[in-house]
View 1 (cartoon, rainbow, N blue to C red):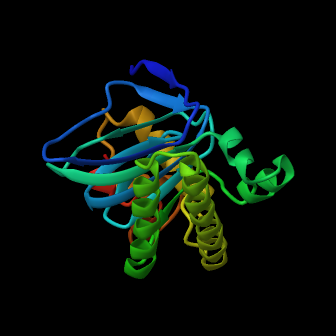
View 2: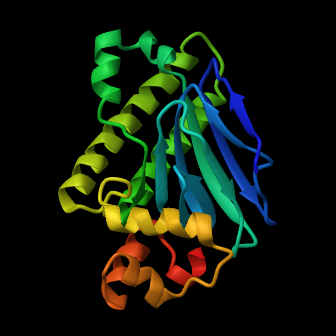
Length: 224
C-alpha cells in the first residue's frame, strides 16, 4: 500500500516538467490547494478516487483541495506537462472572498479531454503563467494572479461546455461502470474476462467497451 503525504503551499506553484524516462510518484499525496494539470506529450496514469485515468496529450485535470491522487508512467517512456497549484487566499489580492467563492464554485475535480484547439489555448495560459511566475517586482504576484484568473474563467467555460455535451469524466461515468472499476480494483488478481465484466452490469461487450473506454481512457485489458 502506498504511503500518503500532505504537501502544503503558501504561494502559487507553476511548474513545467519534461521527463525523458519513466517516472512514478514515490507516494500518493494531497494539497490544500486547487491543482490544474495539463498533459503536453506522452502518456501519464492518474489514480483519483480509485479510478485509473490514462492522460494523453491535451488532457487536463482539476483537483479540489485535499483530493488524494497519484500519477505514474506505464506504457509511455517519457512525458511533458504543466502544473499549477493554487492557494485560494492568494486570489484575494485581486478578488473579494465572495468573488473567489463564485469563481471556484464552477470548478470540480475532474478530467477533461480537450480538443486540439482548446488544448492550444489552455497551453498558452500556462505559458503566460509560467513567464509571470518567473518575474520579480512589486506587481509580479498581481500579474501572475491576473493570468491565472483568466485561466480559471476559461476552465469554467470548458466545464460548462463539457457538462452540456456529457463528456466530462467524473460527471458522466455511469454507476455501472464505477461498480465494475471498483470490482476490478479489488479482484484484479483473479481471472477477470471482458465478457464477465460486461455481464456484471448486464451490458453487451460493445456498449461496455465504449463506456469503459470513455470513462478511463483505456481499454478493459489495458486497465486490467
